[in-house]
Length: 232
Ligand code: HEM
Image (cartoon, rainbow, N blue to C red):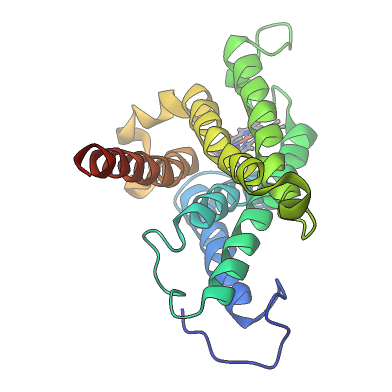
């Protein structure tokens, strides 16, 4: 991603670089969902507006949240411009939170046995898998709201450096809960790769890999820091 200098205010969230991020992450997620569920799978096109867009939205949400914790750590495209890097981190975090909220709303619109038979029992109530999956999703969304709200300009000053950093780290807890959300809802499908159309893994499996990357990177960074502290 190339960042041309521009005359835009440096802190503006929507600018050419972030627009490219959106095009790649959201566009890529929509294309993957279309390829996996319409072109190679058997989902009818009339289910694109809600069912398939919901899959794309949820995948993009996870990728954006993950990216917000990876830019500057293992994604170094914006390292030459500190201000732009901060804007990209903020954009990815806020976009991830917004898309996760949209995913929750879209899911509630179609949360019926006709769409998700595997999450319901015979009388039409959520079964244990459904209840657990939804409950963890709601808590994950709550924990995502914390770093999102504290990106507001007045928050670092209002909270103080240490507390502000702690709220930003809540996103890792949210990512761990997203992993649980995905394991509960998707594990069965992950274990049956023979049923994957054209060998394409389900969106939930792609998303769980994306969610695990920042968790593993953070774990490694903490491990290295502790090792340095012990040595020095
Ligand atoms: C109120 C909160 C939430 C609700 C009600 C909810 C609901 C659902 C439902 C019903 C599914 C199954 C969708 C399907 O198989 O098509 C699902 C899957 C998924 N959810 Fe959530 N979710 C919530 C929060 C979240 C959050 C916070 C994230 C991530 C930031 C997330 C990411 C995903 C992903 C990536 C999938 C896999 C989609 C797929 O395999 O099709 N969800 N969620």
